[in-house]
Image (cartoon, rainbow over all chains, first blue to last red; front, side):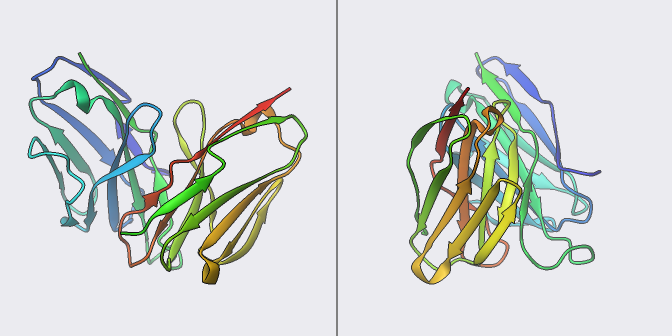
Length: 118
Length: 109
């Protein structure tokens, strides 16, 4: 597609339930990033993928959070046993297609998934 | 890790005024980006500018890498410029961006 897409755009869930958030990066982008933004705050890094591997998981706030990427494309962020403090906007970004753009590492963001845990 | 500081944290402008937003960072960088987050939360890419000067319409940006700062200029501001402006940097490869806390701009008619 033309840009990074994310689904769902909004998700309301009950405390204790599991949720899955999806990210479709720009076609051919090799790197994929997950960030989250709590209300009125800046962006907090969660995890990034280079291809299908995750060199840096240091931002995941707890072992309830996990992510995978398959086929070097779509990624899923899973939050198990959701808590109210997980409420935030989860943003996905991708970067770098060596066949199309110069190596600038510019990141492009999707519209985000707004997660509300009640 | 690298630290990013943005100033001012808040800015209120009359429509038509000019403004300068500043981003200081604590280490050398290979990527610096300016984003505008609109009221719907979407992050819009403004500039990719690890060094030098770029202009796009009423907006321009300058990064002085040796002195570890970047400036975003907004001229003849419009109400649609309102939102939060983020500076984000990284200092190696394709690693994650480190974001500043942003400047919240309000342009009033």
